[in-house]
Image (tube, rainbow, N blue to C red; front, side, top):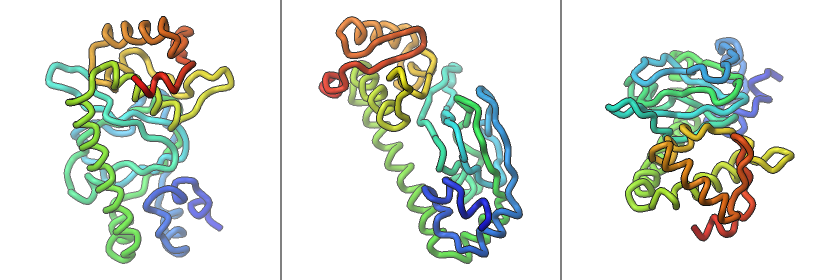
Length: 224
């Protein structure tokens, strides 16, 4: 059995539709990398000639505003693929992907992926479903940014980080975001984010310990 057959990325992504012989081809053509914390996987506007499989670690997908502020659009974790939309549309990537922690990543060249896309209907349908899912998420995010207050967006984001990425033994959020990154995720100024975190802390909704955040009352956060 090839390593690609056993890989967690195949279990949760479009690659689960690939047949055994296709997985063997995949194992022969892929390249594996270690991406260090803070390093980019790719940068907005880059022409990416393939897709990236996230074997381990978490990265942030960001977009720079005209005034240079970084907006975090979403977080990507192990088991997911990057670059599918730009590969199909033959356009430069619309976002940057930057590691939030050390990551294990595999790269599959576009030429090989497009063979799978053209020859395996189940794989091509999986890719299109993933892209449609990303569009739905983008719609939901746009509505949230327009209709919810900053306080609501912060509460929602803290719950999302808790439910999606889990907690450490000390009950702090496993994914550690700086105050700037958290502000970029909810679309506000860093000062506003710090003020709201302090307010949540005083209200007993969370506990702050340096950069660590512990959710002490999730039910009340949900009501916010």
